[in-house]
View 1: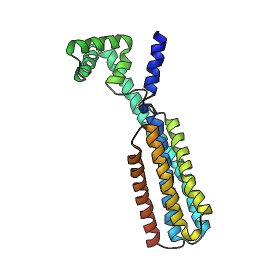
View 2: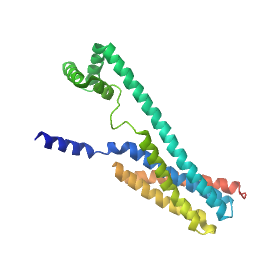
View 3: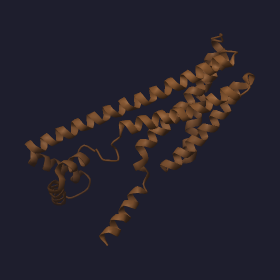
View 4: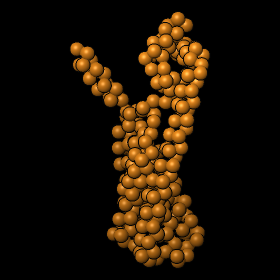
Length: 238
């Protein structure tokens, strides 16, 4: 009976979307950045150049540099976050060794603020402290959980791979689209890709699909429009 209850609880917890937040954030950010930045770059170069070779070179270079930069940036960012979390956990561990009674009172006060009466809060704090004091303080005092903790390698790979996947679309457009109408093809296919990305990310994360699609398409359009404007204003052969 206990095993069936445990399985049921695990399945229930897994049905929530917050467990996907870390990798989904990195993947959506990478794909979105890949689509918009590479498309914007291609549009800007297209409006300033008359040769396909120049457009292809700039787009390919942007794709490679962007994917590596995205992966490295995500790794450094998440690693910094992880270092801070580890330092806080170590500090909390030392405080528990030096001031166990004070830490117990702090934990009880946390539960009081969440709605428990003073006696119940202290009882819960004592029971959790007896089971695993450090885990209780890390979760409830520091707010660090398994769900919120990010993996630097996972985030970097997801972000870099997603950027590459997103950036491949404008690259393919620059290869096959007619040169005279390339900026229009870039915009059309980019908007289509952003709609798909916004819908998929919203469905995967359990969010509002229309809101996600409108948000991502509007900002993508602004980005490409400004890039095209720069290309027209500085219409030089590069």
